[in-house]
Length: 341
Ligand SMILES: Cc1cc2nc3c(=O)[nH]c(=O)nc-3n(C[C@H](O)[C@H](O)[C@H](O)COP(=O)(O)O)c2cc1C
Image (cartoon, rainbow, N blue to C red; front, side, top):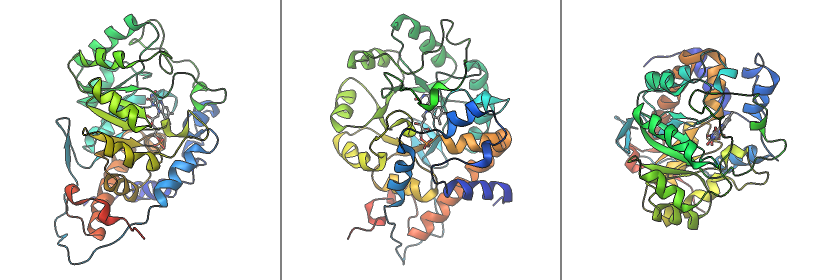
């Protein structure tokens, strides 16, 4: 197993994240720094805390001489149930931007999500990423969306993640401070946030493009059921990393009821910082987790190489933690590894 002291240090520093930011971004401009680290009303710290408050329970006498963390989801095979979250404006963090994150994620054999507010043209990112999950903000003018969606499909997207939790953007929300980003992918300007009249008909319409549609930002089981009824093939439980609504409910608290309500894969993000958090999420029924800010910090720390080694370290720690818990494969991760009084 490759050991890389820098990646190990990065992993451990991120696993100890207290929700108040990291020195990794000290060298980038204040705007992008706030854009990544920022949060509304402590909602990011609440996400972190909720995962960590779930106690894990080790089991003995299980053969963990061979641990397999790999999963296949929507036809995609990953080294662990782990993907990078789609996040905007990566060129403000590192000159290679989304290209570097894509290359790092692919080299580490984990999933890659591309923001519709990419700062690098989609064609260039797609060449580096291989099959990717294209995040979509459906704009108010739906005719703008169709060419973008077609282009994502032509460039090798395996699915669409339509973000449903950002119909308006608050004063002080971190994603206001990016500075302007324009993209060849949105000639009329990138929509930030989504249409404030987004409906289930839009979800059905997106499914007509022939790829799996995941709804990102679902927080209520009834909304999950409605999305699946409209044709969604997956749900991403998310509160936008605590960036969108002060006082948002931590995703660890939302996950179990949504898993119970639908029979499609449920993914989750928000405050996942360690292998232990990933296992907690899978134990509560998640099919995979997405990580946002940790990947931004790795990108800032050293571009594609740092993203790759950070994600490889993450996957290695998933193996180690599964062994400690007596879990030989992902199918064996269930709520038996969580302490219930
Ligand atoms: C700098 C930044 C930009 C983001 N941009 C987007 C975006 O364009 N679209 C979207 O759906 N989510 C966006 N997100 C939210 C992430 O996809 C994800 O939900 C969140 O980062 C997960 O929480 P975590 O950062 O605690 O891992 C962004 C997050 C960050 C940190």
